[in-house]
Length: 312
Length: 302
Image (cartoon, rainbow over all chains, first blue to last red; front, top):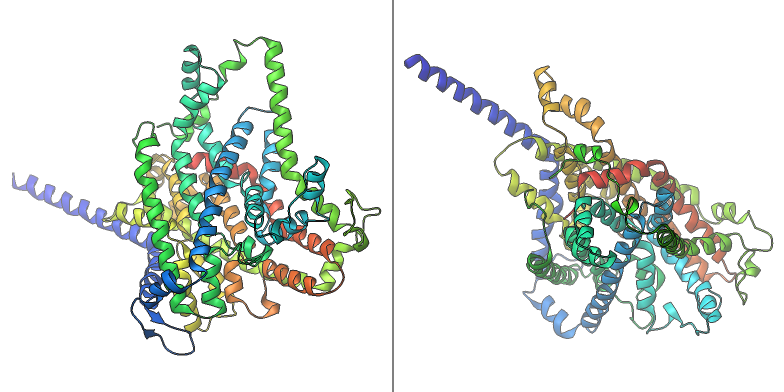
């Protein structure tokens, strides 16, 4: 009796020691991330709250001014609302088009074609172009008088617009650039992965029920890849709201602030005018917008995202 | 849920191909699909064609209407000319230096962290992993300014450290997620048998799991390479001295000088842009087999 208890106790002690060692190893392995999280995320995150409540131009130490920066942004900054509007317009158009385009390309490449690897490479190549190259390349393609795009438009009887030089067409031009650079990229590959995860049996069952191609896409493919869609949507929106580099290189926010994206605004205040406090406030407003949009999407996703099996 | 081991085994064939449609109709459908696939590919490739063609044009052929599809005689010297007009070689070296060090950091630390999350039980694991995922939606704009001030206090401005050092701290949420997902598909028996042979946990990772993880690691390495090679915002914030510029910043600088100078330089800008894209393209070609596999197997579905 006693010996049994002792051995049980011993075993438990040994077990818990193994457990403790395992936990220790676990912490050790994740420690780079943990340290990085504290140093490069959490600490900056918290200090940016404080910075956003100060007037800070680097030269002088930060001066606490309460919510003045936020008040300025909402009421006095003439570029704040326009930059938000441009950014939302850009995201609102480029994200749905980009996702539809990527899905379309993924469906094409999922047709068991000959030379799939080659086609996939063609589709993927634009997304490998560095963003500065992409901007320079499209500036030249969209050159109003001597560029290829307007020349081709002219051939079919359309007088091409001034593109990046026109206040009306500069944002559509940037959307076009973004689509070219992203439709065949990582997002398409992720869709492809999602499509390949749809069990063939479902299509077979649908066929037996007499479903056509469209109905199979609508009732089998779409629900089955809805988690992929959700993933692409959430990250796509965050990405689009952060649009910066193409506009910075191709238009510098012009003409007449037509492409003055929110992050461009933030960047200018932070690193051009050295308004670190004000830029931090802009960053926090941005964070709240991003988190709110993501929250809305998560809430909405309960209605349309379908997790097969649910056991993850 | 099927693991990829099982999935690989069951190569399925579409029923469409074995019964149903009359052959003629199927042929027409197939051809239509090929035509669409080709048109889309042409749309993607046309800008490249135009860039290559422009990069080989004589300056006098740039601003003409109607535009010429091809240069009269290809000006091959345009490409080396770029290296003479700007310190292109210097930029390439700088970019490679930063990129390689950062990729090593990201791959190594993402692997270690992913291993910790995938194979060890410890209190708070689920919560911490959620935190990892949460940082994915944290826009970098929020942390950018305090990070800048921090690196400034460390006297790291105008050095490569701000562009490299953070890579060694976790390697980024997306990469941790990707490698962890991949590790979870590898049966635990693999670890167990090695452990019974007396292997330490690090040994198990290096000798047993890493060889099986090649597709995931290649995927992380490619994404990481492209991310750092193409990175624009951070180098622009941190680098001031021209000799330290990375390729994208150098290109941007070249664009600014080209715009102020009198002669058209679009041919050189196009050549420079193309040359800057080459490393990424070459890398993708050599590793694309792993790359697609890596994403498929890690089962990213949201």
